[in-house]
Length: 531
Image (cartoon, rainbow, N blue to C red; front, side):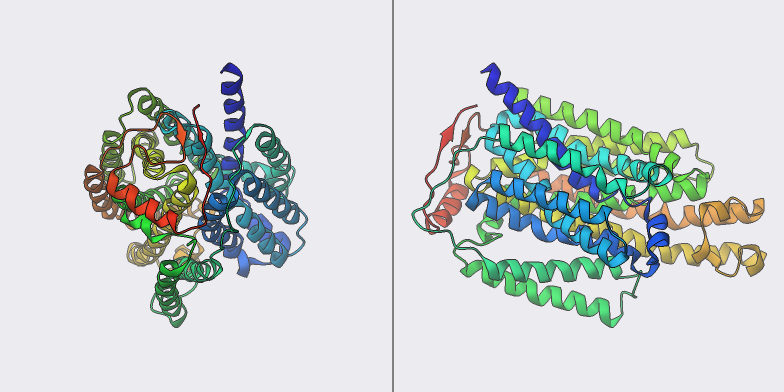
């Protein structure tokens, strides 16, 4: 038993590395982009360095989830790690923006597997009752990477060079691969006939997702929300989304089975996670910018000021997981967490120009407290609602909507913040004339430029940032309150104490819906193991 526990701990360490690589990939280049586009002469393609990764990652998550349920977690996880390493090598060797964007796309294709399969693999070897403490730590990994990413990217850029943001993935990837090979032991699944791959569903989902993500990314930024390009992308997303639903209803092995949406807990949790992600990324994404422009802090210091929130999130997520593992009770925590996040958004909405930075960090820590109490437990609830044989599909589906929510939150705040900033800046700076802020106006603001302005002008600019961003936090509070109400209707199901390929703890109606759907698929020889 001790040897088995040690193997699980070593496997978990390896899965933590894979999760960290994927989440770090979304943030590590943010502070390095100005240097990268300058060296590669591609400022007009700058947004694609981030968009290519996020787009590929979002599209691939449901695909990895379904294929891993059919083909097994281990081979696909090794494949995803290999792709991520290849993308990192290509990124480190890139001599043009086109090469870099292609490398980021390859990274994203691998990164989608790292994110989903690391969570699903935990469900393969850890029973739900014990999984809470592991999922809490794993969920906090993303929070840590959101701070570590910009800091590492800035350090590499100022030190050995931005290419090391790619080279660092080689030793990490090799460690993750070794841990997967040596410690991920899952019984092989055998089939009476070859599983049918849902190629039509994959293609339709890819087009729908790409159209939606690009519309949200470009809307209000590259193109106006009312432009032909953005409206056309939304139209394509709606049409292909409808076609995707039809294809899934006819597919033998749908990539996102419709029976998932007949499960009460899945629907409630997925909606709550979607709303929380919108609020989380809307709030957190632009606070470093505010701290730089309003507080005069450097990019690295602004990132460090987010660290208290992430540390609180890490500690609370871990403690919440331990509590769930010991008691088996999980329903109250996400509800409380959603309410705490709503409280934190209210506190953040009270920030004034003269609010001390320690108080802002305290408000952000309250946000970390709420997120640590809720976010990763939502994944556990979804996994506990379905049998192990489809846990990859279920995990990928709920994470897919969470990723779309994060993109939506960032897009909404980015667009509204930018338009409000220009309006308030024009109003507050009108008395000083164009010469006071330069010919570029609000569009040309940088931290260095703002804090080099005469004091009255600087105060007007800082006030504009405060008026443009801070009130937006209030707009997200209703989403968190709705999430809390939705989670009140979760039907508690006892957390399984063994890793079984059955739904022994699920309610009969959900079990019948899932099992009847699985019976029409190629027969899977199930395995049961206790851990």
